[in-house]
View 1 (cartoon, rainbow, N blue to C red):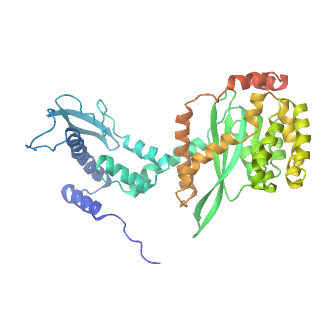
View 2: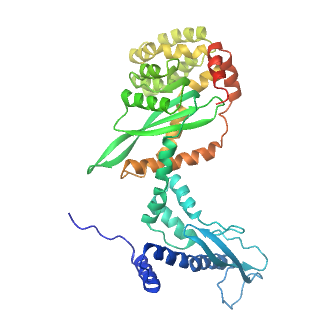
View 3: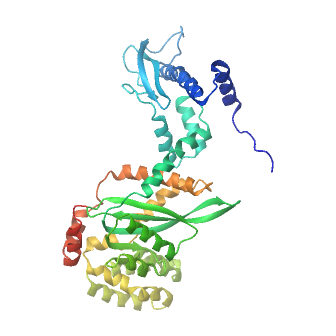
Length: 415
């Protein structure tokens, strides 16, 4: 095997050598002290660069200036960094309009540079993009290794999140898979990432976990449901899923009272395989009259008309005949409840968000996948901000109209 090449830039090597020559560290602790000592001058130089940009001229420039604003001394600050407290002198301007981006006014904690890196990583930016952005904004280089080290810090947090206790009760659970490429044993494998989204009794969304397996299958889903139960879940009203064979029976063996709903959108996709593309629009429009009917009786009447109208495509009709029970059970509940349970769009939207970070290519390990997706989840939590899903009050009222469901809900109302 050829020896591994050192990919560090010549600039970073020169800086490192200069630090070693100047401080002559003999231990890791002394090296950290040396790095801490250069943080102050580095921050000051970056702030001076921002001031130059703000005023439109460099320090000591004695030429004509387009502004009457001038530099006005310094403000002494003690900054909290990942290396400890660092003393700096931050430049000021006369009219007080200078608003530095690196260290905003009244900010004393700059360890947040790591948070910025994590946020960019969570938004799907590659390590190269993050390094370029840091250099563009702040004017200094940050190596790919440094970025990796920063983001690696979340692995332990992600594992704690993955194994955290869950609530005892969820009104709705949505399950789905996406696939990512992971390099394993000198080859790249397409692995399944299992995702579970839950709505609690108050309609608050939470991702219960993500699991990585070789491929999607009933047995792995069974292990996941077992784990969810072990983490504290006692009861679930509805599970919405696509068509994994045997999953319904498996889910009910663990949560005996759960209603398992096949995703109507997936059934539509399965059935239009038998429909010419020129007829898609008319086919789906008439089909919507079936599952979107106001009552079961109306749905049954529309289904008869649907079967007659599309009888020349028996393959498409058969999909709905075999799965009619999944349409029929929708009408046991109010329209607002049906709208939530009939599709897995809620979790497919999350998976679409995940693909923004998985599309970068293959991952070196499962930990790398977990790291990227967990950071993305933290961004989703910020977006959801603990708010219930739309029209939850109406959903909750319609659920309460079923005495059996209401009894189960009230048991966990405070959870």
